[in-house]
Length: 386
Image (tube, rainbow, N blue to C red; front, side, top):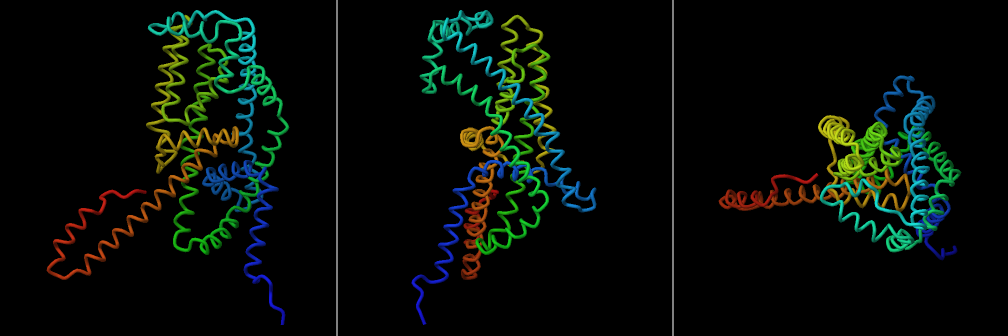
């Protein structure tokens, strides 16, 4: 009999590693649409289960109807808002190019600002007013000149084919996630129990709850605040209301970002000669924010996952830098998952420590047990992480 040069089990493992590496190399371009589809599916799964009941459990019809609802109520509005925002940003960059070429005097509304108006006028004259100033500032901040930034904005607005292709792949992945999701989860559970036999069930159940809570409590509410405040900007007569609404929704993902946004816009309205519109906008934003934070957010999230500011900020910025617009949704979700898994591990460590302390207390002689148990229980944390 011939002896194998490499043991069959080792050869199979290395072959599996090579196949996985080749798959990642060839299909890494599909990672963003697949992740986006998974996030949307996790967040909307409770509604999808109700839809399945309405169609007598037919998964193909249910997945088709769910996909149509996603397109009608999520994809189409975001696409229109993004198109208008890109066109308005082009106008902003075009104004910056002209100002960089000829210079510009300080706007009157900046001069009218109380307390800081004079200081802002000096800064405008120094960094914006003279010809070439914006180009120097852009070079300092981004390392690119104003012409390169303008061409980049035009290229981003013109890459519609790439955006449509990514959107198409996301919708295809979302359809099959809806239709075959439960079957795939069953297969994944069987594989996960082999990898993490004592932890897989608990960690895997945290994932969908975390994604649903994060998307509902952060992303969808941020989109809603962007839409509502964008409409308020339009009613108040603010220039570029769509872009400012998109920026407000972006800022709403960060704690304190939404009130900062509508406060700055209100100050602009007051300084530009529209005090009633500015005060009304500030009052409307405050009322809307109070209603969302005190009523809607707790009801939608249920068991809210309190994500600290720093992970939220890193997830948002890192997601946008890595995945573009879809990173707004995926970045905070991934950070929330990391925080949730970290808390689960801390909770498990505390449970093990507590069990070890109680076991040590039970193993002591009977006359030493009361004093030792009292000392041990003082060291056991009263509030567990998790």
